[in-house]
Length: 479
Image 1 (cartoon, rainbow, N blue to C red):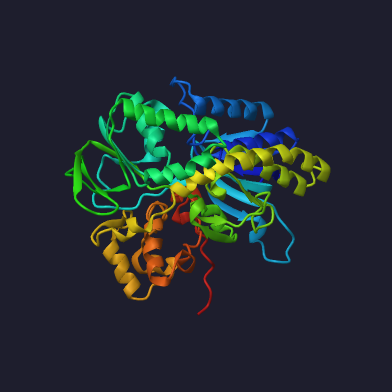
Image 2: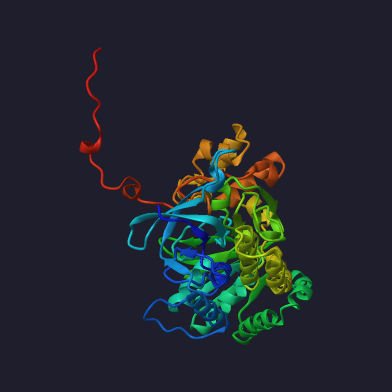
């Protein structure tokens, strides 16, 4: 293993880009690691090489962050998959401290490892989709997936599309679909108009975001798109592809059938905490911030020494707040490493703290709009698939609970729910909420213990070239 970096930043969204840039500007030896081919994250996603995409506010902001990152001299490793974390806090108490260790695969599939004196996790979020009949049909995709298709290459998920779920991403996706020539058959919003009105005072702190949201709504009105408020998708129908969806008011009553060849749906976002759980950092359940989030101080330090978390992985506050949180965390890490004096830290931190407070107020309001709605989980029919990787239905989960499963780890053992390639990223929220209904809440249900690998990894990447001839045969011993 090579000599340790001062700081490793995992995730090159707005928080990671800003953090790596600032740390490098202060002279730290920094490495930024990212699964995508280019830095940017979901909001500031860069177009693939050879593609020219229209400029908008998100792309311009992303380009500015990318330019500053390149100029800073921070080392960028894009297209890599980090599957292992270790070292640092995982050393036995009382032993000499060692750097963090990260194991990964390069863009070409070659294994590598590196060490760092501090680790900043900017791993963002994952989508929450609460299952319903037909949710696994081809043509049903997440709102974030639709965003990637539209932003990265201008690809439509379908020609006649229903957009459903919660939060501002609903209207952003619907507006982009219209701009790219799709027909938006309907928008199905879990929120009531009253809930949106109550969020307005917080959004007033970011008039640019408020104006953007108003523009999205205006586009829908101009195109005559029907918006169903306080409503949900009850089922998606089709044979080998999606044909139609049914919509029902949250208050009940008759359903409305809408023909469509694509459904873009998302019931909010969940902070990605695989790595902090693997480090056994302290977490607490904050539904208004997306669910389970690491316990952090004002400088985004976790309960694990030298481990920081910034961006939406620290709790949902939105892309506008992410760069400031990354810079605050980077400054604190530099101070802890002795690369920044107390006075210099204090002076450098102040403007970023003010920027974070302004942006977080609006982002927090949107996060609360995307909080999990337990009534969606309660409405899942017994034969609906919860864990698509392992084929586990709600009925199977309820049977396991009847047999005595009391924690998420026990539920995994009883049913294999969350043991497939997605490692519970898709099914975990619904399964945990079903468990919480039995044991008295999400805190009591807990979460599945973080385990390696963090991402699926080919076995040969772990073992290398291997044959039976490589196995040492011990010398024969007398019986």
